[in-house]
Image (cartoon, rainbow, N blue to C red; front, side, top):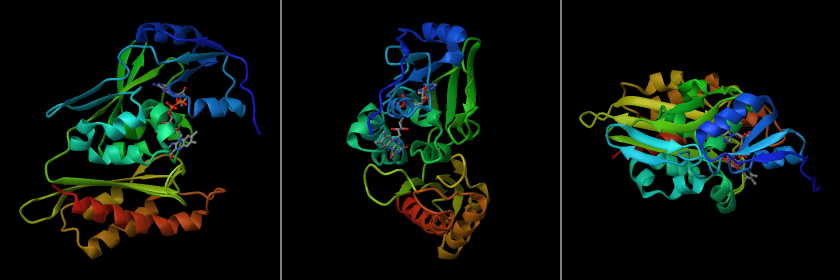
Length: 293
Ligand SMILES: Cc1cc2nc3c(=O)[nH]c(=O)nc-3n(C[C@H](O)[C@H](O)[C@H](O)COP(=O)(O)OP(=O)(O)OC[C@H]3O[C@@H](n4cnc5c(N)ncnc54)[C@H](O)[C@@H]3O)c2cc1C
């Protein structure tokens, strides 16, 4: 059924300072607009009825994409998912990120949707958070008092709930450099290949000792496995310091299930998600190992 948008006033600041000043006065009556692929449908369905919609599209500096071998990657909140998917720089240094971006929605959605929107929506099923959690990314938030930096793990507070105050804007994500001899994989499971909301998503990032092949560092993160995107630190410990053979991988995959609290929804049941988790964790770990360079 077609629903019209509720009435709102539109504001498009040209600078971040202007945007912050507007939020200081009107934050509790305003929703920020990035690509609009979440916000506009939510407004149509009456989930949000903001008095003001403030576009971030013209505010300078929110679409940066910078990389340094020592400093890592800085990705502006307004970077489009398609930019992340296609960037040669990201493909070379953070292939797990371009892979996650490539399975989000459809080409049309990826051309509009932004990284900031994907994180701020804070959907448990969002496709970008698991890879970014595995990369130990940080969120940089602009406030009227300056900047604050939040580890991405602390950014998500609940389903559709993030840590931002009403007068705060996510400006960029900072991702540390990936260690040598690392490989990463994001596995998204759904009923079909495109335009599918993730039933379970698993990101695995493993670093191996080139001498003895043991796992020096393991990071696992999941989507739709809990009320927020999560790291599976118990399973990471199982992998760390050991040679990741079939037995260790199976042990880690079993432990992940205990760290998750998936729920039943119209898409599928809690029980089915619990069956899927170890299968997908094993798949992600094995593919990540194949990619260790
Ligand atoms: C058909 C369809 C398919 C989809 N498929 C997928 C999928 O497969 N995987 C997936 O993860 N998502 C999917 N989505 C959801 C959506 O496309 C993504 O979450 C997208 O990344 C949201 O980005 P956006 O720029 O469109 O956000 P918007 O809709 O503009 O904003 C989303 C929310 O974040 C807030 N916000 C945005 N930017 C900032 C900022 N910088 N600071 C503070 N708050 C901010 C907004 O106020 C709003 O509340 C799909 C959506 C549609 C319509």
